[in-house]
Length: 188
Image 1 (cartoon, one colour):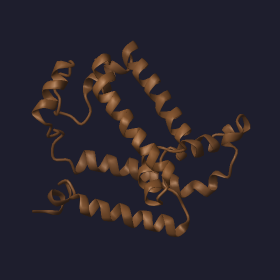
Image 2 (spheres, helix red, strand yellow; image 1 turned 90 degrees about the vertical axis):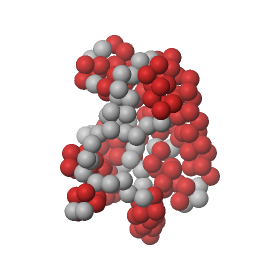
Image 3 (cartoon, one colour; image 1 turned 180 degrees about the vertical axis):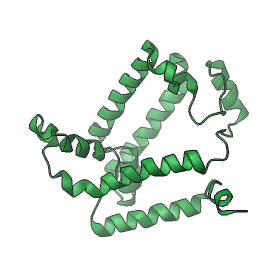
Image 4 (tube, one colour; image 1 turned 30 degrees about the horizontal axis):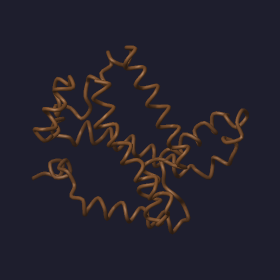
């Protein structure tokens, strides 16, 4: 087995978990908190939004390290999806495939994201634009209201044993279950 075949296999949880724990240890040691949604605030501040809203008026240079995390996530995702993924199929449970077919998804499991939602032709439809706008607003509002995003609360907040992060993560899971079992069938 060559190195590409080896690293293109899914990594076991205990390898990934140890790597995440090591990064969290380094962040805690440096007195930093991890979270992806805070980068939007940083990018808006770089763009001059601090002139219009006090929320964006802060020293964004102190958050440069977090922008590097975003760049790494983008570059790593590109490398993984284009060079390390042997195929784009997802091994789904047969009941999940049947439920998705009943909702109108034509090829569940054949791609990481369904073309019925993320296909370029759907982006410019009324339904597609509505889903993106409403979903984007709810995610943005929820991350701001909860004081952070799923990665910030679930990785950084829980590792710091913060009770608000535990409550937020429970809320994220409840919201995901409601979306999956009640709202998604209505939308599709």
